[in-house]
Structures are given as structure tokens and as C-alpha cells.
Image (tube, rainbow, N blue to C red; front, top):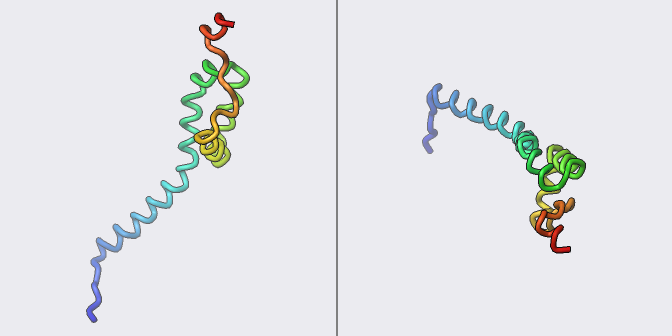
Length: 91
């Protein structure tokens, strides 16, 4: 059987690719934190100040926020939105 001999350039590219992949994998949990921080304003607008900050705080915790959002996809929001202005008038 013949063995393939890879060039030095190919070996370096392969090893470098793994290093980049490892770094990206380490930063993925913090990507959710960045998104939660960006969306804190809309959470506060929809849920109110206290509930919006609590919801965004939970979302910002790397693995806890992921689990919370996965459950919310099936079940719905844990922390309900505040009633809209039109809903308040009809009561």
C-alpha cells in the first residue's frame, strides 16, 4: 500500500485549522451572552424593567441561557410579556 506524504505546508494548514477550530469552540458560549446584551432593550420594553433585566440576565449566562431558550421554544416564555396597551383598554 502506498502512503500519502503531505507537504509541510499542508501539515501546517491542518494543524492551524484545528487551533482556529478550538478557539472558535471556546468562544461560542459567549456569543449568546453578546446577543443577550444587545437585546436587553427589547426585553425591557416587552416585559418591563425588572422582568426584562431578569430575563436578559438568565439569557446571558452561557449554558443556562441556552437551556432556558431551548425549553422556551417548546413551552413558551417563562417570564410573560407585560400586557399591550390595546389589551389593557379592553378589560
